[in-house]
Image 1 (spheres, rainbow, N blue to C red):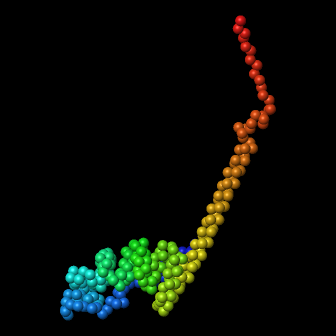
Image 2 (image 1 turned 60 degrees about the vertical axis):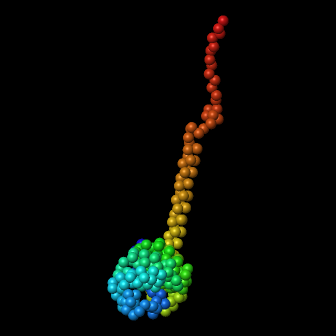
Image 3 (image 1 turned 180 degrees about the vertical axis):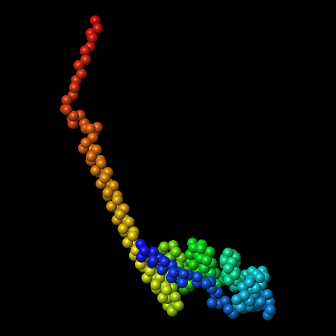
Amino acid sequence: MKHVTALFIYLWIIMLLLFGIPTVLSAQAAPVDAQNSPGSVKEQGIELFMKNQPEAAAPLLQTALRKEPQNGRLYMYLAVCYEQIGDFQAAQQIYQDGLPHAGSDKATFYYNMGVNYQRLEQYDRAEEMYQEALKLNNNLAGAYLNRANLYVRQGQFDDAVSDYRVYLSLKPSSAQRENIEQMIALLNQKVVQAERERLEQERQRKEEEQRQQALLDQVLNSLEESGEETKGLSEGTGEVKETEQEFDIVD
């Protein structure tokens, strides 16, 4: 039992190292094709965003979005600002609003929404978002890694190992390769351990069923052999007594 507990703790330490892949900007996110004149609200907001000043950038990007409500890139910039501020609910709403306008960035939108749901501990929704992202771009390595982490949380160890391996195939030089390989080894141990426990529980269940059936048979046999109430007439004295009865003859 101590060995299993230690293994579980070690597994979660590695999870902490793997978890938290940040949201991303599309590979096409910079440079930005600003069409307005230099110094416009949109350009000022984007410039502040690129300088990692989300609090200052957010209101300018909101203003720019009101002027360009179909500009998918602005939705992504604004959502990332809210992520940096720590308001993940607001970021999710902006991504949701921007999805119809995301164009070629739609997979990135879904991926970032998955990351935020994961941060909010809404794991089922996070898994859905990663799946949507991978439907659009099956080479999105971060989605495999984060989904693998979700599978570990849910005890789906075989699925987690599969996703970790896909991630490593896409990112063979990943800085996290050693940690992921350790995680795979630990999960394989847990899969084997879980299967052994399942087989042992099944064996015990069958033994208990057989024991109970044997006890029932024993009690039933005992009742059939010794119970007087179960005997027929032929098992008694073999005699049938006749009762004599006098009848008065009425003249």
